[in-house]
Length: 151
Image (cartoon, rainbow, N blue to C red; front, side):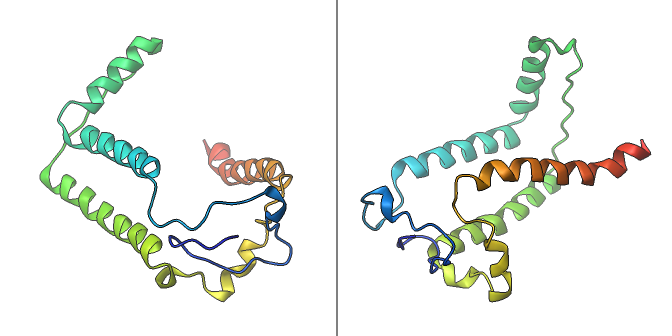
């Protein structure tokens, strides 16, 4: 893994692929590309519009759900209060701060040595990813089974 100026760097594990046979790689990033900034900005702006503008999101979603053939089953009841909006902003602020710290100062959020064994399954081999799908599905099913049996 080549180090970049954004995000954490770490030495490769001996069992990981290095990607050296994949050809030349671009140089270090000096700034985040515009395409990687525009998409999150548009998505965050849309989420903010749906969450803040009264009647913008819920009515549109309910109308789209009814038009899709739910038979009138989609009903949107949204009650916004100033306290609820402040709590939402208070929950989003630490997340944005942690994300900014992870990009600009990765040493603050570095993975401790005791967590390194969790990285070992991420070897980078192509066969690892299809193998994880049935394992993850089985684990989710095992977690959901007690709730399904009690219903």
